[in-house]
Length: 513
Image 1 (cartoon, rainbow, N blue to C red):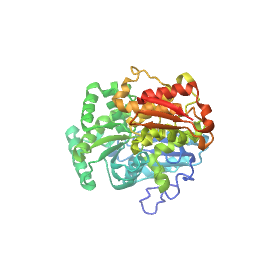
Image 2 (spheres, one colour; image 1 turned 90 degrees about the vertical axis):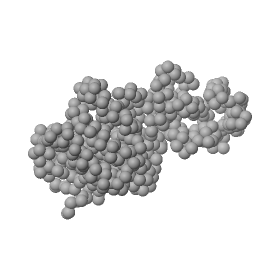
Image 3 (spheres, helix red, strand yellow; image 1 turned 30 degrees about the horizontal axis):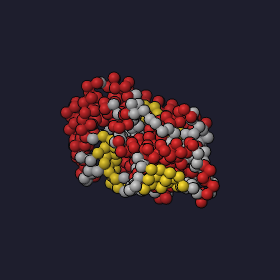
Image 4 (spheres, rainbow, N blue to C red; image 1 turned 30 degrees about the vertical axis):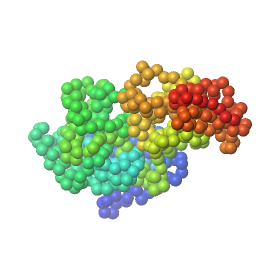
């Protein structure tokens, strides 16, 4: 019952049987993925839209299976006990959720340890859970595919740092290219003999070997793994960054250097509490920082993006058809939210057509966010009327959405907030100007107020759809209500049209029926 790497002779490929059933369906049954890493064991249960599944359940335990591995050659004995206990719990949970099969993969520590296969056998005997031990090349590819789940068509270098290894893979327009693996994991470096000088020399030598294998990689650097996410949280704390969404957080080489100095100055224990990072993770952060400094020095990427998507999401991406991969993860997630939560599913398309004349010169990136906002314009209607605007803003800034830069997330939040309110307190929201400029904030406000007006103009007849007309030369705004739709225009609609006219700085506005 023991399963080894798919690349090992005679082994059963874990991808021969699709992880996701009925991938062409818009809605999935719950899918459980168990990641047995060198540092942690994590269960993730995915649910929802095929292209952008939601995280139905997410739990991890810091087992540190790889602690001491480089010295003894064996998995940590206490870590094994903790891991088996965690897997037993996870199996019980998934059974209670009605999930019949859990896909479990093990990475560097288990594949390197002399007792790795014996551990997998123990897990099966005690929990009936099979574990697929993947090799470094597979791990690199899966992590890169996880990045592609959130950033379709992206290009750059993916760096996945685990406890006992570090993988690099290049991505280019939706494809994974060259990939390499190394033992530059923090647990390995922590146990290296010879102190800081020896460690620096080892990191430098290994990184230059990796660079020779990978070739020039000076595009974006995507960082995958718990240590990188922890480093991003410390950087957010240092800069008092207004959002706390780690996914798509951007950093530069200079900010990395400042944050590592901040880490040393403030201290691990203090930052552990301030940033909500576990002690075991925080203890490895200085070693991760040393690796990142050398990585930046050798590859010289143009910028850095933190990815919360990695190996587990890569397992999903591995099984997707080309048709599903080609879909926009943001739009798919918004469509699913509209279907599930909106009062009138499908009205988002009508709202998009209604507001579109106000953004005639918008490029594809802005139109994409406008479309997302229109799909989400009514999904928070169940909230108390006094708090709908606040709920919309909070949901957008904190929602687990892929394919969304922080600036785009903030634009979406402001637009959805103004979907339910004409006014905002800029003293309260002044921090948003650190992410968007004034023109961007104004555009989001205009979109929100246009959606606020359009949401009043419900009609079932396509011919009688309300339309906005905006003449940029004369600054004239006109609302057209054909046929029976004229009955929809009243005092509240007039007030909302006036508010939109003020926001867009119209010289005149009116209604035609």
